[in-house]
Every structure is written in C-alpha cells, then in structure tokens.
Length: 113
Length: 114
Figure (tube, rainbow over the protein chains, first blue to last red):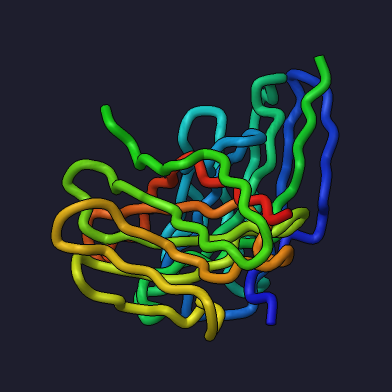
C-alpha cells in the first residue's frame, strides 16, 4: 500500500532551467508534506515543507505547490544548478500517524551544465 | 553543530551474525526514528522511540529486529541472525518533540550481509 508515490524515477534538465518534481498521495489526513534531498552515501537533508492548509511555500530557489483536491504536490527548482543533482524524496507526515514520515520512492534529478 | 550521529558507517556481517547499529540524536532532541532503505527503494519507517519507550514499532519485522533508546547513551537497532535480505542502508532521524514533523537524518549505516 504505497501512500506516497513519485512516479518519475529520473529527470534530466539543463542548468538554468526549471526542474519540476512530482509527488502523489492517497491519504487526505496528512498534515505536512516535506521534500528531502539525498546525495549518495549520505543521509537525506531536509529541503522544504508545506502544511496541508497551504497551497504554496517558497524558500529561495525552491517552491512547493500543494493541490489537495488532486492529492498532488510538486517541487520547483528555479534556476537549476549542477549541485542540485541528487535524489529527491517526497514525504508525508500526519499527527495521527505517531509522527513517522512516509516516503515516496524518490526521483533522481540530473542537472546538466 | 553536532547533527545526528550514526556508527558504524559501514558494517559487514556474515549470515547468522548479529548487527548493532547506533544512533545519537541531535542535541536537545529526545525522539528517534529508524528507517531502512533497500536498494532502489525509498525509505521505510521501522520504529519510533523516546527515551526508554517504544512509541511505534509497526514497521519492524516481527522477528530478529529490536530497538532501544536507553536513558543514557545512544539508540541501538539490533538485528539478530542476519540474512542477505537485511542488507540495506539504515537511517536514524531525530526530532525535538512528538508533534514536530521536522526530522533530521544521520548519514546512515550501510549493512552488508555476506
């Protein structure tokens, strides 16, 4: 039962362009959604989050959009930089879920110089 | 700025041996979560602990796996009689409080069972 899904295993974009990573979920009881970035042989690093009562949150080059009716969120990175090349995980958190994070499978982003 | 510490970073065990993975949370954090990442998959929740208490172990395999977070010292994830299928990256995360969704991850322990 995959409650959080990232259907694109990989994405390749040119440096300076926009990267859009997508995530779908099934449980409407989630309170927060988070994006983590992960380099090989390292732990996930928190990037940005959004509350379920918001539809947009922005932090520098990173913006997360939430469409509750579609149970869909996306992470926009503008402009993309080669250092952004990593695996990006979408995660969901619910207060009624004892605090655990539920992760998607990840999307590998490659930003070409 | 001491983040979440995990050791060892790499652990090789033969089938049937025991594996012990350690996690020290960030300073000021008293909630610890363990996640496992199998090859080509996302992270899967295993167990959530506070000091001396297991809050949620719904993601732990029923046998051979156990976890603790004693009053003093790091949290320990213990795997007895390891099998090849236990080979994975094990990540520990910590948070300040139970209602805090922001979890900070350690670098992980990569367990290889030969």
